[in-house]
Image 1: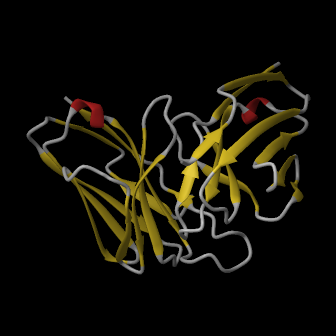
Image 2: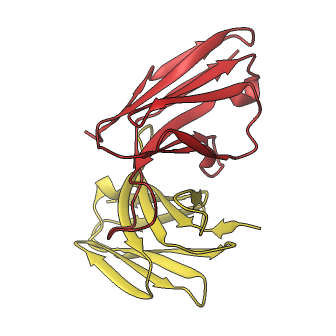
Length: 110
Length: 117
């Protein structure tokens, strides 16, 4: 079956670093995506990994280990506006369809 | 602005009504998607269209009927819905296929918040 696991909730303080983990078991693999979704808004694309290793984009980095079925999203220098739900999604070999996890709700406090 | 628009943003309907959701993308993409997002559940893929052809139907009940007249427009026709169908319905688009740098990420519209009474 297809399964993507990520923690339901996380909390952190402004200026801190937080790591959101994602593990997946899917029939195929053609890339892993991270999306950010603020309450009541559409998900917006953050990062994409298809090869093992770290992809850095400003304050956000994403890591992938295909052999372990594992990824993480690293958020540095947290800001209040980073409070949102973070969705991990995997594209299987069938094409462009994405399989989403339930999302991790991150709350950033001052 | 995401480049993907959805109307209406909010919809309240009775179980005997017939309504349609509309999605339009201005990004030149060839693949379009309908997702359902319920509270405390992952985004559920409903339908996928590539070049106007339906390529995936994720075991969606027949009371949901998609239509894709061209690569820029996608509709979801609703009839005799149930209260458990109340959710946020998200449309997304992407480049088709798996080639190209960047992974062909999906761009989402703002969603239609549907309430079935």
